[in-house]
Image 1: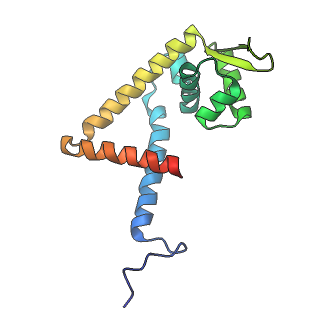
Image 2: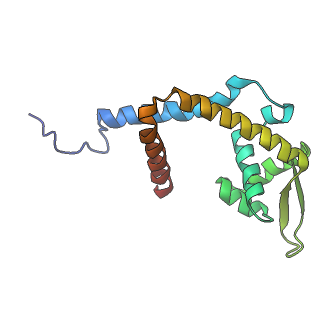
Image 3: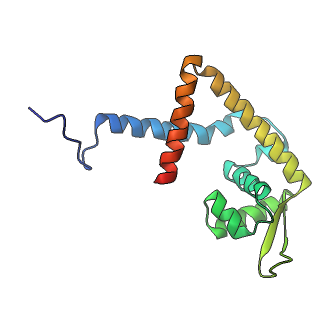
Length: 158
């Protein structure tokens, strides 16, 4: 009879771990693809990817950020951040200028159009979050919130 107290080996994941991995993948895929199902919004907002929105939020939240600082906050490489910033600059949502403090550095700012589009994007995300929240049984909401916080911490720690 097998010893059920022994943890499964790294080569043999437990059924519970496999179920967690499937659920995790399905959740991430649903989050990525949820945006494409709406098809609503301002012409600029509907073309904004999640990463672009995160980048714009980082620009808004930092004081005179350079490309490297924005890349770090978003979790992308500097070349990737530069490409996204160039795309958003062409759309009129971001602007770049030389830093007054260090001419070697480029400062990124949100334009009025970027601020407006980001606000539209944020409202759309908040509406989605509300619809999802409303589907969770009220008695389960505190547990779901705790679980989301715990998952975020576990992701940060790993």
